[in-house]
Image (cartoon, rainbow, N blue to C red; front, side, top):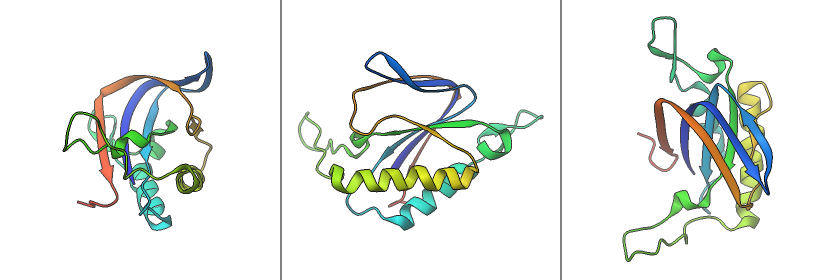
Length: 150
């Protein structure tokens, strides 16, 4: 499971000209799921993201988590995070999980994140053509891969 975490001062998801998710201060999390992912990946990743200290404290030091800063979150599924670009110019998405595997894991990821944060998170719609807007705050962008826990 891969995630791109972006600290935002605002973010939104629009589908068919309708805003379906919108936050101010918080995180936009893009999540890519592969066949090898499981509940262990979900628990590790949601805990890591919820407790990631990337928000500034009163001394302007990144020392606070999303929970500490009372921020909000949007989670968007993004299979293109598993693009293989080593050969040729057309990315291959063979490692990305098919919907029958990815959808239940994506839904479980959302549920577990809500448990971690103790509140609802907003989401895009799996498989939809989404327009994702954001103002990256910092900018702060972090990539985490559960198969490479460094």
